[in-house]
Image (cartoon, rainbow, N blue to C red; front, top):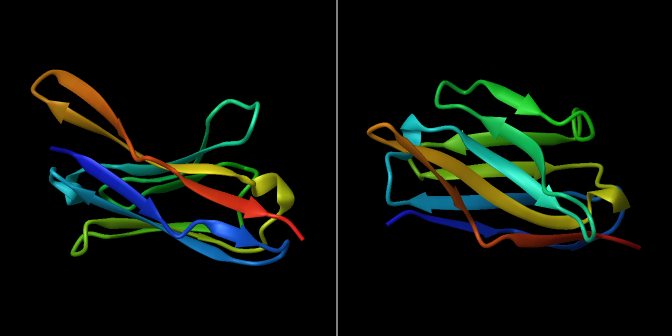
Length: 119
C-alpha cells in the first residue's frame, strides 16, 4: 500500500526557513517523479516543485531561488528546503506522486503539513 507522510511544517517568521520531508513507502521510490503542492485558504492547489527519477527539477516561478527540492532514494524521502519565506507562502503543503500499474496511472497524496509564515 502506498503511503506518503509529510513532516516539518510549522510557524516561522518572514525571512525564515523550514525543511519539509515526505517519507514514501509501498512503491519503487527511485523510479518515480515526486512533487510538492500547496493550497492556501480560498485558493486552488498549486504545484510548487517537482523532481523526476533522473533528478530533473521544476519550480513554480513564485518560489524559484528560494525553495530547493531534493530526493534521497536510499531513504525513500523527498525534501523541500524553503528559505526566505514570505507570508504568501502560508499554505498546507502536500507530497504527491503518480504511479503506473500496467496501462493505468494512479495519483497519491500525503495528508499535508501546515506552513504558516507570520510575525
